[in-house]
Image 1 (cartoon, rainbow, N blue to C red):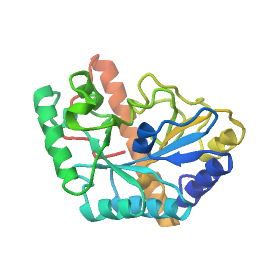
Image 2: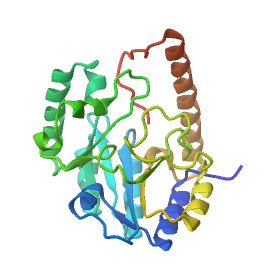
Image 3: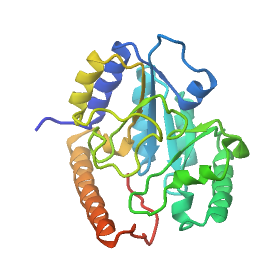
Image 4: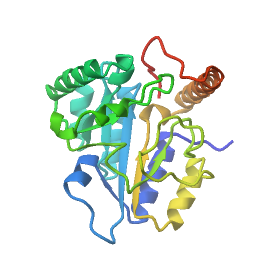
Length: 269
């Protein structure tokens, strides 16, 4: 079986995007300066769910290629001030990967208070102007629902990665596939999903080579893209178990007719 979801394969993906005329920009960069008609733009977003160390390796690779990306760190699971500052020094944007409705079991007032507190902790380390929800596929709550009752301006934010890119075609590596099939919440609201037949990174490379699309958003989880056979084996095993658990929870929810409530936040990607 061909090797996929490695740091080397991610390099191929970045180079393909650049070769096809896509300009990588951060989310805040796009929101501050929308692209001009006729240009091609890609937002490379990274949800740092598990490993700040692997996120830094990806950030260093992107720096070598002249790419700026946006990294979303979780509180407290990957809230590593040293790694956050290092990511910024490499030229990238850092944002807050929030999951406050999951943590508060859907208590909206408490979730909004917690959002402000955790955002303040991040802002003691660096400026934060964009955020991205953590999916938490085992949770009955959708963390993005806080924005049904609040505005970005209430927290001095420019936007949210799932909610502020409605005209972008969105790809995510969740589930170790680029296909949108089987993904619980990992999609842009009111946005467009990619063709379901794009599963592997090789599929995606072939698609990029011929597409006429001008606006892409890619969610790439650093912990899924190791370097070295040992790291690849661990990532493959973890994804296999994660997909197995997610499938079990979906079946349980279907049988009960309502979402299963987790005992703790989902730490996985």
